[in-house]
Length: 290
Length: 339
Image (cartoon, rainbow over all chains, first blue to last red; front, top):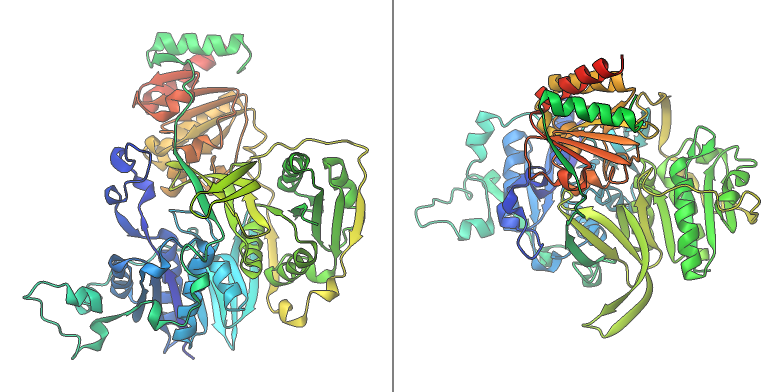
């Protein structure tokens, strides 16, 4: 029996490869200097969904992302790797959301998608490392959650069996469907793009993207509906404005500081034999080592 | 009412270190705020557990002892905490940033609509002025953490929602006995009042715990490698140096992400916080994400081919050179001099 799976994915700045121009002089983040990527653990989540699709005939994988218009890249990337379709939730009303307001918006979109058996998300996103959105979405939807998942063992007869990675061990748990699960980076990496799917979905666009294309762009989405990426604004989803964006975010950023190290007086050495020899002798003499 | 609550975690029949560390921090915050410190322990067969907690300064210990609360699953724990918090209305709720705390914290914060900040490296009390609303908030919890991959440090506040919740990693706060004879009040939680059959749908079928293979936290010397080590194979030289020095091997997040070392060796905000006698940072640039977890080391040696690496600023000794050349020399001269 096939499953209907929703994968939550986020487009994030690549904070792992921060160059020297990543910070502006005033100490704020220069987002333009950072590449926007598919959040790594969301790819682990997508892979688990694609494996279930292979295992259980008739399974569909739907991506859901919230972000600015360019986050449609995340949907395309997912389609290239084997997802069936995707939704982009995009509106200024969502700007400034903390994890709770994000979870609320996502849960409203999921309620609109309505028909699903399983929600899979990455454990956490590299720009915040909070690991909060998965559990908060689960709570908003009143569904059970299983976090830190490393492997989906099976999903049969309305139940899912999962392997979790804990600090010092592993746990096998069984949860009912539907449930929300979050996947760790210790789970298998996502498969690469498939050439065939890349050809098929290369021209997949949201409505706003289609409207801003160059004149020679030929819109084929009427004949090929799979080329249409669903884009939802706040008006397409049933929400209560008081829980959205900045207003709906209980946490506020009070201050942001650039990192300034208190410079210690340090001894600078070269790696010459003589200097290393002297360093070792000094450390032994003051009983730091030995 | 409006006290500070620490949600304690059980680890092999004892209260986890991270919870005792949070109690120590909670005690000092409670003194600043002139409120009480309360602890919550949920699990099974907890008789006498309060004796482990009172010396850390808790005024009240709430114990929920029921078979449905061990091993940990999300829903029954969340149901008890939500219920308790609705009655007690804490102003602050603290949890360890463990797999349990990071699973339970967001569930509770979502249900109570309260703000939660993950992996704080510092907690302070302070005021806040909202200039737009012309409103002054007194005695908020400043939740301070590196953000954006550790490139900035952010102070987060929850002006209007309670409790103000935060998770903190093990080792970040210091654990200190408040008073060995300190006694508080013991309150038993009626678990059946909160946990309903629908909370018992997730079942732990099997649990396999390993003794931690790596004991970085208690090691007095740590040899740590970063992305600059270049490969998993090159990491081998760190194990050799650690072997001769009687040290443990640590790693930066970038090195762990690149697959050079396992996650249980990761030092930093999202790994372990350490305070060794000597910390040797090899090929580590020193993003705050990393330094947050080692800056209290008594002595730091940085080995890096970049003379401008931020790690150099907190190092006592800076060796500017190639790691693969320098580390074998450290081994060689240590062996020579220790004869």
